[in-house]
Length: 509
View 1 (cartoon, rainbow, N blue to C red):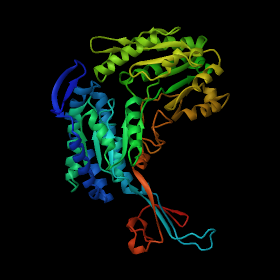
View 2: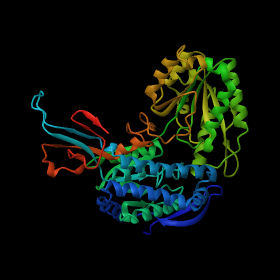
View 3: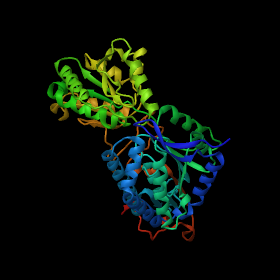
View 4: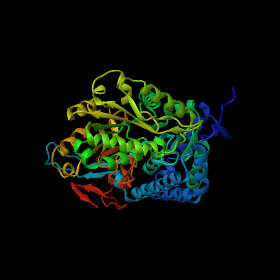
């Protein structure tokens, strides 16, 4: 049977643009993984891989116009948004190069023997080593930042791990062109081009996670697809770490005092956040708890005015569009659900933004309204009106893990008066990032960032954004009583590489 062709499709029209490749066979997946494994040794030198990451960043910058044009043709996300995302991706590659140069990610710890300790301490030297080949599964909604050259790939390469990327079917042409940029950058530093493999096709993704030489995987996508791959990774004869970002409702709690103090500001901010990128951000606020009363009413009116003025937009593909329209229709039919601004079909290829309202009491207990507690991908949010704080708390107690949780406080509450500190503490178990008087869309690439959360937001406790994302692809090793002559340079007493480390209990920089 001939391999299925891989087409680039224009989401604005639903028409095929060009045949990009064919879906990879099991033999081709095997060849890509083995080529990546063959490149491991070339990544061992930290200076080489830092230079490679910087060259990859420069290559993406040089090809910016062509890459953004290709990305827009396949995603309809717009050149402004895509140019910003590419800039973020370039910055991320350079940031990881800096992390590689610094060397703190190796977590070097050296303890000399201490016969007086109880029990006695032998000579112990600990650092971290790369896991091996990493499978990366591209996301639909971030064709640069969570795709071929995105955070999973950048952090894995920084750790010393080659990658094989399973492209997303929504942007296969862009995937091929970005992969070519990375391979040219690798070749410029004597690294085999197989250090960044690329495969297409659903079955190829399954073959990839099962391959015995794949040592870990990173995924961003749906709960259904991510859980299937997570289970496959765990069911292998040798299970592997699977770092998946699967889904998030990203709840927002608006206090009564905040609604009374700045209803219009909150309503307008919510509208901007929930419609950003046509509602296709993984941190879109999907459930907002708003108090009953004048302040809450004004907030909802402000939200309605802002959302009603939002233009219809194109989703990443027609399957997502169909799912959005069907999902909204199913939710609108639930008892006591209203749509002040009705979301749904905007045109032949577009969708319109809107929001739903429901009494919070309907969500406080298990029932048919549980559908409203599931993520609906696209420009829609659910506003749950609560009569008293306990009602809101009951809804929050039913939520699974999330990437973010937000509380909108009054100025006095934000200053520590009232229940501000308690509310922050109540939201903390729900999410990996807790926001005060802000909106979750927009994930800064910074050393302190955490993009993850309790399941099903992610399948691990790690982050996929920020410098500590590199930790996913490393494992610690300790050498005990190893002669100095046998030790890797990172663990020698005289520290020839100038690494930050903890030496006999003292932190050395």
